[in-house]
Length: 166
Image (cartoon, rainbow, N blue to C red; front, side, top):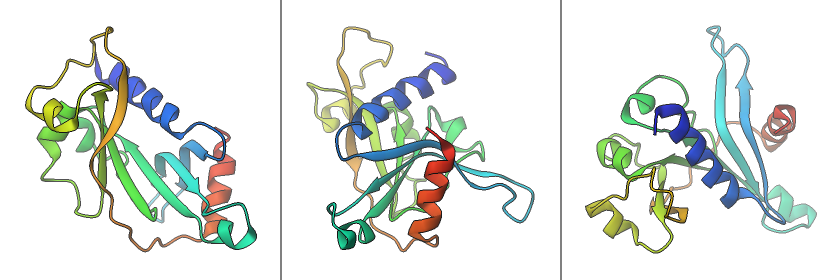
């Protein structure tokens, strides 16, 4: 698969994980149109996870940011890596994870594409080619995200998610 196809493959796996009743997410979320330097900051996916449906449960909800990275060059491209959520994840292939694992910030978690029938440790040793159409793929955590204090308010992030329209 080329870079674009790999990004689409990973995005589709993440959408499967984020979809369903009581799950709220948006894709291609723009945070800053100018960023003070004329640069736009965009996050591939933002998920909002309320504690429950009560007023206080919604207020205590957390935002999870996801950045899709199809290869090491994509990780170093300067696009993305906007980790401003309560928890933040890189979503990638096992091959790419093996190349960037020492470069990912300590607080950032990692999801990798993995066959449903395999454990991430086995996949780490002998990765399955992602263009194998006979495999049922899913995302599995290889590194858990540590919570951090976000800098943006709930109102801002919910507005940005709504504005993305996706």
